[in-house]
Amino acid sequence: MATAPLLIFAPFALGFTPLAGAVSILLGVLLLGLALSLYGDGERGSVPIGAHAGLDYVLAATTVVAGFLVGLVTGDAVATVFMVGFGFAHMALTASTRFSRPLGA
Image 1 (tube, rainbow, N blue to C red):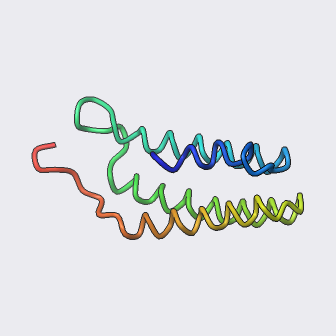
Image 2 (cartoon, rainbow, N blue to C red):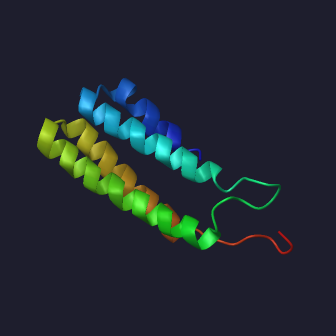
C-alpha cells in the first residue's frame, strides 16, 4: 500500500507525458485498490490470499509491459525507466512476501 502513491504522484514530480501520466496513475490506483482489498470484514479481506498473490504478480508484469509500451508510443524515457523499474521492484517484493494470515483469522 505504501508504494501505490509513488505511481500516482510520479507523473507530477517527474514530468511524464500526459499518456504516461495517465497510465501510471491508473496502475497506482489499481495497486492501491488491491492493497485495500486485504481489509474487509474484520480480519478477513474480500480477496483470498492466493488470488491476492497472483494479482500482485499480474500487476507487476503489467507495469513492466506498460512501461515499455509507454516508451514506444510516447518516447518518454523517464516514464519508461520509472515504470519498468517499479514493476521489477514490485515483482521482487511480491516474490519475497510470505502470503499468510495469522491463525484464527
